[in-house]
Image (cartoon, rainbow, N blue to C red):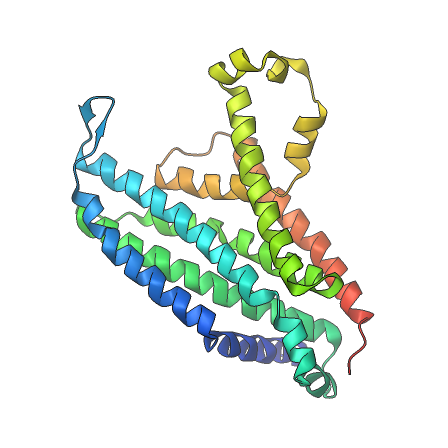
Length: 278
């Protein structure tokens, strides 16, 4: 294995093992598992919608999608929570100076941190989604492999959260970096809801100026350029419902988030190269 890859993997493994021992991570894991096990009875419950009793398969798919979104959101929250103090903690404890005094470059150090935090967040989310997959498959009496595929789609959102939070933690207080990343995710979901409403028949009746025929306004440009966190999660949810891929618009959120990861990653490497290591 090349020395560069070996150094990055060693730092990633150290980061992962160090964060696993954090009390916040342990508490979050225990509470998440308990919550999933407590709601498993809902998969066999009776649900009435518009005066019609839903069949068991519809209930299972609906509950699976709800749990999918809750786990994805909780994983992004935990990822930002673990990431916001990583660089500051290493600097205060002298770990940065110790690591960088060895034949390890700053790029390798940052890449190892990103990889370790991303791997931990992805494993946490995939494990919880896997638990829901088992509960839903047992309740439905058949395997639901699309659920695990939907979880893989959301891995890109976690990478965005890690890179963005690391970058912001270098230029602002840790808490502000955390609030900024979670705020960007909240804005993405609100903007996605407004955009979806504006394209519906009811939304066009309420907001005639928001119709697709009105052209590209400032709001539309903002929506397409803002990080498509909600769109990526919606794409994963469509896999659970087996809705297929309607076209380019379904893949665009992945391209959008990947572009943000590349740009923010480049800024992160450049900003950390100017940091004073003491």
